Amino acid sequence: MDEEKDLPKLIFVVPGPDEPGYLERMIAVGGFTEMIESQKITRQGFEDMVRFLADYVKEPKDINQRIKLIIGATENEIKSLLDALANSGKVNPTNGGNSDEPSKTEN
Image (cartoon, rainbow, N blue to C red; front, side):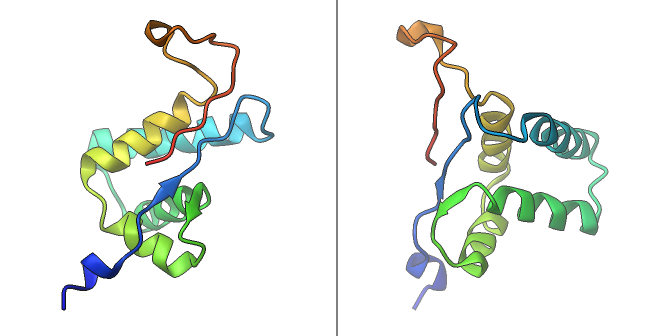
């Protein structure tokens, strides 16, 4: 039996622009993005990033499953999650959205 097939789907929720902690999130996202782009990834940095991203996962409820799903994600998936957090509260104007409206993304 393939253990990965038994894992639930990861549902990631991006906080809206009225959620507290905006600057804290931006500092963390900036640091993690810089760590990835510079390829200076440390074990502690990796663990911090996984834990940070796990805080924005709605499903599964179990923290160990959330962490396992994040660790198993692709590079592009992780970058997309960080990107979604960096752009929280923005709506793509090409979709007719108002940039003042909060947005939530589920991956």
